[in-house]
Length: 120
Image (cartoon, rainbow, N blue to C red; front, side, top):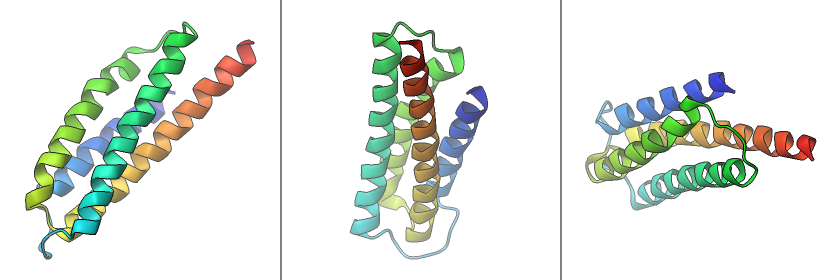
């Protein structure tokens, strides 16, 4: 599970780099901005769901997982703060990374759910 968490952390960092203005395209569209905000919120909600299951079932989360909460919150703040100045191309690349984070968090959630299910 820690390999997945490391991948999530790397992808969060990459998404912030993309939003720092690596591209040369036009300004971000309202549609892309809304999607980035929505997907960022979805990643935070997914982490919160995992955290609730871990706590409710008295599972022991490793340090990487507990540290991820601050990293995800920081990433969300950074991403949303940079959206106004972001270029469309950069936002789309960040969106791909955020979608990857969501995919990895979904895998972690499935793993946790299976662990809980197997324990019952």
